[in-house]
Image (cartoon, rainbow, N blue to C red; front, side, top):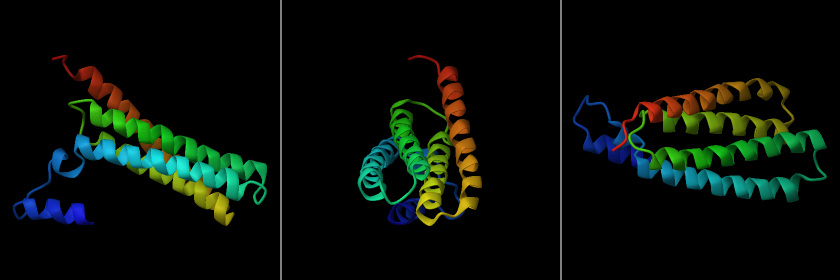
Length: 143
């Protein structure tokens, strides 16, 4: 919220924020590192707090969410290090990983089966972000 307010203060009325004002490379790296740390913490939670309280299948589902959160945390770091890239890659990757992983965590913790139908939305966003990253990287001329 604070970051959004800071961006809004720097913009002229009616102006649209640029990529660097919304998700700068530095922000992408910081968010990616934070997701990776969160993945480690959630992995430990799953291994210690959930083991024995949920079925093996549910634990595997939780671990899938953790694994993909880590992959996309690392992905956001890579996006932040690669320049220039399409400004939609980092937000798509972040949204996809959160939708995918959170839906799996909630599915396991609440035993709400319909949340399994939400995960593919996050998966599609993650796939789109990686394809955009590949295309953007390919189109960038070496310096």
